[in-house]
Length: 214
Image 1 (cartoon, one colour):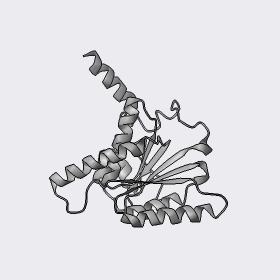
Image 2 (cartoon, rainbow, N blue to C red):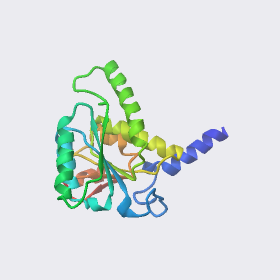
Image 3 (cartoon, rainbow, N blue to C red):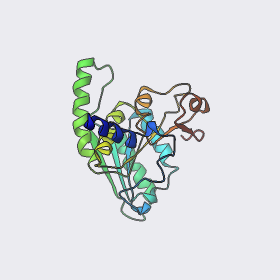
Image 4 (cartoon, helix red, strand yellow):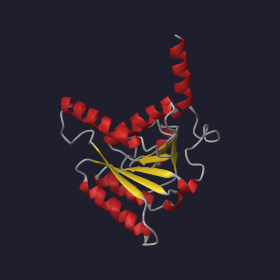
């Protein structure tokens, strides 16, 4: 009984969905106190998700993140190419870019059956475990399914005290009146959840809105 109580207390402490937005910002510890040495992990969801992510990243000052890790699903060669191109264009030849590419098993293929999806998700879970061991300071994602698993792994690491990674989810511009399935699943786990339509913040109080970002 005592163990269950302790686990519940721990869950309350680490689960962002229980706290009002911004309630835990002040007391948070990070792996890198020097912001310029921070490690940013970027999840590429393929197709339109990758396109939106790259447009979003163009608005960030990547000099604040000395190390960047790009995570892509197996078989997504287009996202790999775009990530490399983005790094080359952002670097402008000033110095050698410091980034890594990590491939994880795709959680679910289009049209895949239930049993096959379960097996694929299990394989994705194991591949994500190794990737998350790099302990990024911040992870940013915008779907689809594979990001649910990797963010779930990050949260488990946080629960066990092995990491203190901030999870940031940016909902797709296509989600006008409701969240995606990935968004609904990750809303309680994210430190920040950003939507791109004002009507969504009325339906989902923990979300943040700053206009159209992509």
